[in-house]
Image (cartoon, rainbow, N blue to C red):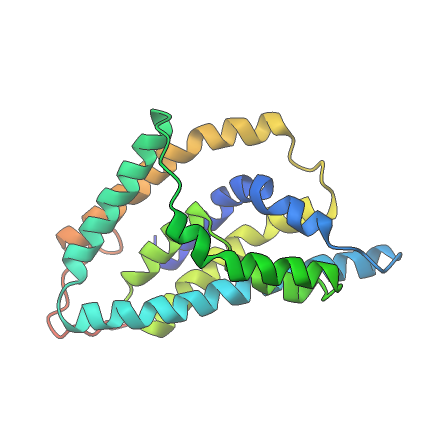
Length: 229
């Protein structure tokens, strides 16, 4: 399975969690069109906005990842990323509360204010979707960890684009009809999320170990430049 498919499934399974976190924001956007196909078009614009932002974040994080590849540090970064993801999963399994980071809350204050302004002034679904993509989300962070392990900015943007496409189906259906995914289903899938995170963490670690296993643990590239086939 390629890295982009991994990104897609991170988005697909993570979107169940996102419905509870980001869904209410989409419901809060006033719908000015009464026709059903125009309502669907608005929700499509909202989700397209999110995916564009994810791709943009991938492009930015990919620049950092490219420097790591050129310096030959991608192996250690991949292993460290995997360990961090596994630790995050264990905290969820053991229900360990992590203290809120005030610095992060200050960092995202401008985005929250921009969202509030956009909703107040009816900026539209696309703009709100763009801003929503910048909000803190655990699964977006996991996807960005995967993106930083890609060899270029373009490949990182593609990784995040695939992640965004993975979130698209459930988020679109949830924003069209809020009752699509009930609380019982969300709870059951959320219980499975830590195990998915552990699997992803081990995948990151294996990629860093360079066991020369295609896709799962590819051999280290001596030149520091990825070769796409």
